[in-house]
Amino acid sequence: MEMEKIHIEYINNQFIVRRGSDKYPRGKILDPLEVAYLLHEDRAIVFGDGGKILTLRDLASMYADKKEWWLLFTVLHDLYKRGRIARRGFGENDLILEREGKRYQIYVTEENVIVSVNELLEWIDKTFAKNMIPVIAVVDMYGDVTYYKASKHTFKKIDKGEM
Image (cartoon, one colour):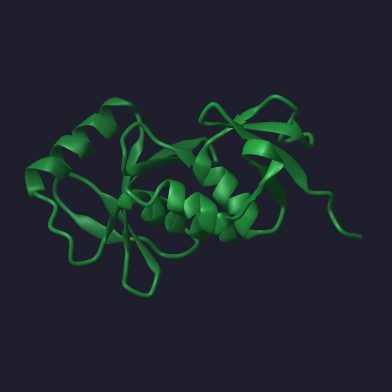
């Protein structure tokens, strides 16, 4: 049995559920990352101006000037595939994941991008101040994601089942 698609309308720079489900009730405003995921999984139809149906490619064009957007989408998609539910974080390049009573703040970057140690340490401090576990997600050129649990002293690779 095929699942009925969620209907989302893009109006006034917002994605609003028009016909949804228990998880996506009518009137709920969705983050563009979640809309992209729903489109990628063929679980939604997005209507733009004049009823034009928007595709994932259209969404990508809308956010093309935000390079980190596709990195965030890649990590969000990877987490969803692993059965984890994440959402947009506090900054432009992070996500929040809640699992088994723990909260993770995930800093998303790509390989070969230089991030200063001071920037990372500041981010780690802010994450700990929010009582969250800092994790760094590195996206490689193939779209594969590696997760590192961060602390002020070490970066330790996370095994698949740990997060």
